[in-house]
Amino acid sequence: MNVNAPWLSSYGDVPHNLDYPDGSIVKQVFIAGEKLPDVAAYDFFGCKKSYRDFMEDVRLCARGLLAIGLKQGDRFTICMPNSPQAVTMLYALNLIGAVASMVHPLSAEEELIRFISDSESVAVLTLDQFSSKLVDLLPRTKARKLVLTGADDSLYGITKLGYKLTKGRKIPKLPTGGNILRYTDLLLKGESYNEPYDAGVNADDVAAILYSGGTSGTSKGVLLTNRNINALAMQTVAAGDCVEADKTMVAIIPLFHGFGLGVCIHTTLISSATILLVPQFSLKAYAKLLEKRRPHYIAGVPTLFEALLRLKGIDNLDMSQMKGIFSGGDSLSIELKRKVDAFLKKHGSKEQVREGYGLTECVSASCLTPRKFHKEGSIGIPYPDMFYKIVRPGTIEALPYGEEGEIVISGPTVMKGYNNNPDETAKALQTHDDGRVWLHTGDLGYMDEEGFVYFRQRIKRMIVTGGYNVYPTQLENAIEAHEKVLISCVIGLPDTFKGQRIKAFIVLRDGEKPTEAVKTSILEHCKKNISKYAIPSEIEYRDELPKTLVGKVAYLKLEEEEQLKAAG
Image (cartoon, rainbow, N blue to C red):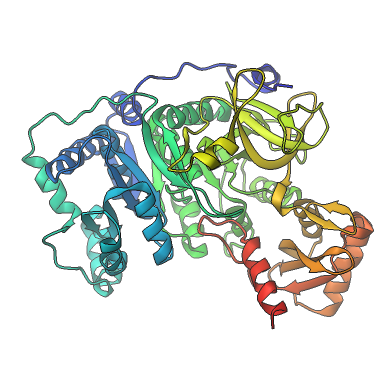
């Protein structure tokens, strides 16, 4: 059973198929920049850079990279939050035919060593505040260069001065020399490099390595080609049916995450639109950004939209300019969607929050809720050229509409494979009887006869209690429908009688007291809305839930905490 574009025509003017370019990701950005060179490519704390100047920065950085000895095919780790230097470096590497390996700067030391070593990176770009850690770690890798930068390298005027007098004063800068140089010095080296620098890479060449979030095991390096990333961006523009030139996209999701790289960064740039770069999330800054900058697009994980509901002092917030609000990276509960949609309507937006589904192995989203229509509980319909199929878990046997099984995906955004991991690649990418290569997602779901996809749960997260299958997402939806609950997370704990028992961690809405009476009320609510076997045997209040590095609720962390408690 294949599901593809025929359903799209019923829900908007979205094309069934697209023509994808044969070249690089940077070439597509340059094409967009040349159309509107005076539009801002990005806005970083009010410091804007036009497409004309941004493209020159990319070329200058590319020449600088060649000047310090990089060559086509080399891997280079970008260990940065969202910032102009990170974006410029990404496309400069692509221009010379090198590969950007994107990692979280707050990764643990052993993780950084593993990421840098796994990618075989020859150099690393990072911020000054992380430099000491990297200097100590690099000798344990094959990286021979460390490029350092600070936020002030992309600021100017009063903003630059203010940064230097406040946060900048607290961040020491390492002396340069040997294998350490500053990003600004790299650009200076580029000014004197006059050799050819455009490698003219092909669509099927690897452009980036992203490490999967690791929520179901050890992180693996996902090899994404130029075609993968360009296709994702073009599909997002088509299916999004709202991305326009000279509009602004909030980029809070980091570019080392497929959602951040593919949607917030590349989709925006190929559209001649402006990226509003946000390197670090804070609730206060988020509120100010929405009020003062009035962006047209927000793309984020569900916890970002949950934060919307906690914003204070924004009664006069005007969101009437919004054209697209996209949720991905984790499951958006039915109740949270209802609450966010009500918030948007209250503040003048005519748009709903639109849920997508995907994973790093296909860059980011591969299906999306139509702009003006949704089915409750659905994660949308497939992007143009993306095929969905539901198979019996552990097999390639296709299942009928409405029957639950493993979600598998085929199309131009599906990764080339896992870096240095042929066994895991073979498990994830399988050729079916139809001759197509299908990505086995490890996610449970089903499709209806109109092509709408419904996500249930990661296969490995399913709780089996007393012989019954319980999907945490469904239970979380029910709990979050309670008027006093803001967000929840459900896990399964070992139980000698049932196999697993259910525990719920709950964050209450602002102003609510964590009393036994409220707990009793939540359990009574559960009894009315879910099966008896799925009712939590234990509820624990939390001020907040732990998050993974990319902002998902870290249910594995909660499981680990419970295991430690059980061990004494």
